[in-house]
Image (cartoon, rainbow, N blue to C red; front, side, top):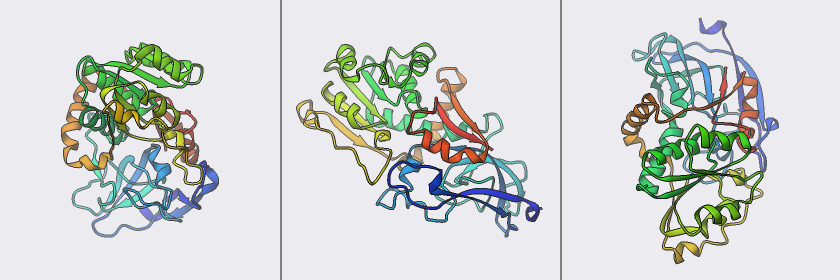
Amino acid sequence: MTAALTNRKWTLKSRPQTTVAEQHFNFETETVGELADGEFLIKTQYLSFEPAQRGWLNDVRSYVPPVAIGEVMRSVAAGEVIASKHADYQIGDRVQGGFGWQEYAISDGSGLFPVEKIIESVPISYPLHIYGLTGLTAYFGLLDIGKPKAGDTIVISGAAGATGSTVGQIAKLMGCRVIGIAGGQAKCQWLLDELGYDAVIDYKSESVELRLQELCKNSIDIFFDNVGGEILDQVLVNMANYGRIVLCGGISSGYQVAELPPGPKNYMQLVIRRCHMEGFIVLDHVDRYPEATEQLMQWVDEGKILVKEYILEGIEQCPQALAGLFSGQNFGKQLVKI
């Protein structure tokens, strides 16, 4: 069966020094190989995209090894088992795992992102975001590091992205006053009208610095940062005493190695305000994934957390999907449907 199938895939051609683009990948075609004992074949249906993938292209010290030249571009994906020589995986099983940018993947279930079955009661794409790394990142980052309390004021950069929008909704459930920073009228209106944010700042048309002073001067209890750069600096001068800063990402840097942005100028505010600033990696909390997933599923089932997907069609769109994360293209979770 597998010998008759053709797999299309993207492999890493060269390491980008600045902006990632299609030129850094090769689009290849191959015949799907035969399964060995203990292996199974997945037909990919959805690919997940997150800014961290840009960082995985850099040959630098990190929490995971870099993607190797010639390797299939790393990505978590969801699909269906269509052939199997593995006792635990049957034809028709819906699964997610680190299958990468390709239409078919052969797996033995192990890997950096081990294969997990997807229960029939949830949309197959949801484990790629709200029930996967995106939702888990929001959950652990906010609750474990941000430590929200009712009445706290929280500011979220990248607020209309998959992680940011989830953070904001959980913060509202915790009784916080939520202020989001996003780009464009449509995104900002969605945060206000659909997600119930208390205020938004449109960085494309407003001065973030002035709006922060108007909305929360010296009173930010929690800053959940997905962006870094100038926005981090502008928030630092408005932190409340004993505030918490959650460092989740740095989209403003593009995760580049050649043109790193300057570090924060206002870091002494951490001393003056006695603030706590901490970075984290969601993989550190793998032993608590079941706890978090159960809670996220309950909130979604109860309509307390809304999900928005931004989907591009076709495996040809993979490089554009990744690059678009750094230009603000996506509105919600960025996926590619195969």
